[in-house]
Image 1: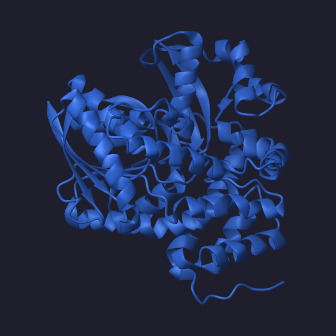
Image 2: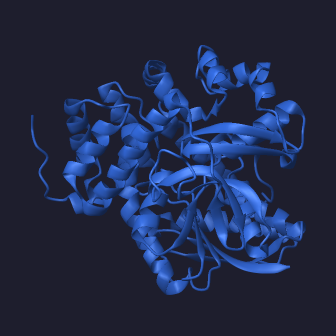
Length: 442
């Protein structure tokens, strides 16, 4: 059986126990053994990380899995000799996410962790840190694969591919969530179902759906499953006509684009009612989870972890690790360099696309051209993403403004400039590259 060392940056995340549960299952299935698990976090996250490590140790002991867990308040030497590195960091913590979600609401725009101005702010904070992590890997584990879960995953992965030497790809749980949901609704085993996916992270579309190699896309779109799915993602049944016409299944984040008014109205209602944004909800969930993780009698994943979101996040990561470690090809939906796989987008940009994964890593699978009604939106968002990467790397106020005004949820000069001013002001401690650079007043 293959043995690996896995380093997890952001090891104090509430998600980490799900990953450990997945590592145990892979060992039990005789796929690979994680002989060393290095949890890495910042000094401020050390207490949470130690709590997670204690719980993980109890899980491993119960399973009888021989794995050495170590914790590190800093990158070195935890990265030394790692075969795989998972990045799941949140620069600024949940407090910064809360700010990301509330600033846009002031301007009549939905505040979201990865989409729109909230995702933009998150990217500005995160990209320099992600690049620094990748550069450290060159000194401590130059041959390791970096699996990026850090949001916004597509944008951060693009920065890493363009500005570092790391062997890296990005992951997201939305496509596998769609796959598992369809498999469950149809009563079939997930491994017999495969998807063609094309687009961007949090703006991708299922264009093909196969059961044992037979295309069942028409069957699913013509069934009640479609309306149930659109209801679930809050997109509205009126979009069923559009979807049926184009013969695609959208990801859940299309809600913010095609139901823009509803998205901000829903969020404003939640804030007025005291429920708050998703950040408020997650903070309440995490307080409960860490109380459970600290219980020295807890040896199994608590059901409450499902409320945290991110279902199946460990599955897609460990599928990729298994394929690379054992050189066994399989298809996964990943964020990778396009190389022409998604027509209509640049060859060197990052796309979310079905990819073959084997011992050499991921390779995007060529997809048909997306319908014009969708491709235009995807191209617009990709323009925003490219400008965001450049702004974060260069500390460019001009490119930051250009990124915001090009985002489909903004597209107004005054709004973009006011958003930028608020974002840079609220995040100044995390954005030294923008320090001292004036923002024009209108």
